Length: 352
Image 1 (tube, rainbow, N blue to C red):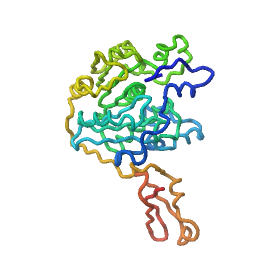
Image 2 (image 1 turned 135 degrees about the vertical axis):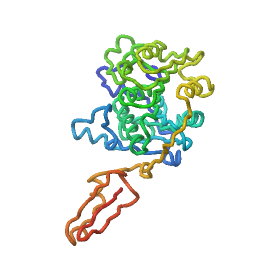
Image 3 (image 1 turned 45 degrees about the vertical axis):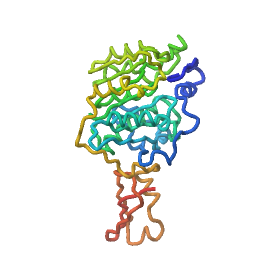
Image 4 (image 1 turned 120 degrees about the vertical axis):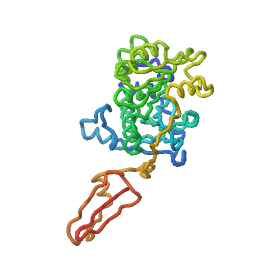
């Protein structure tokens, strides 16, 4: 399924069984804490989730607790004057490590910053199982991280997806005002994609990426690539999706290219059309300055963090009240700083 074929649809076995086919995460992470020094940033889903356009937060408190984790993204910085930040959503059998050379080529050849968003259940994002809904939460949280923590303007962000990564890329462009959308081998919907492989049984599949329904809502300039020899995702999906777009758009049909062809080996396949369509590299005075706390995996904010570091025993009660000033931005620093103010101790910054 997705970048690999499947003959099983969701039925009595439940959505989790289907998700294991749709999201065949690598058995082990291709990267670790030692990888990509100075490039792995950690996005708090609890902090950056729930923005307009994103999947709704869980109604039940116990379900909401499942979203209290951070997930990794790889931030590859371009030149200081780079105009665009490309948010890339990889193929369904990749993780941040296995798509490294493709993303580095985008960075080097296009002159852009690249933020590679990890899927739930992939690589070092182990707090949650893979699903379309959770992946869309990652996508919108990563966008909020880019605009708020990195201070990058949304009009200079390009959402890019390949294979199953088309789903979150389209969801972003359909729910937020961004600078552009790039799709490689898109599909109309999960259900219609499954129908190509299993026929009428696809009616039992729960839809997770309704790209066909979102396409008319997309206002961002959209560039689409599809190989003429792609046997996995039919060209007709791309042609029908393209017809639904009302924005500035371009469809690049790649002669002799299959679903698994590396598109960066021949410049005319991907890099040249990408450059021309978005007039790259372009320049901006905006500087990309990731905050130091973003590189720390274990982030915790609010009362729970204060409780973890608050003084106890005689130190807490001596001299009067213990007052807390919770700092929401940044969510953590290297150590707690306690400032004495008269008879009150104030926690000005805190971390775990």
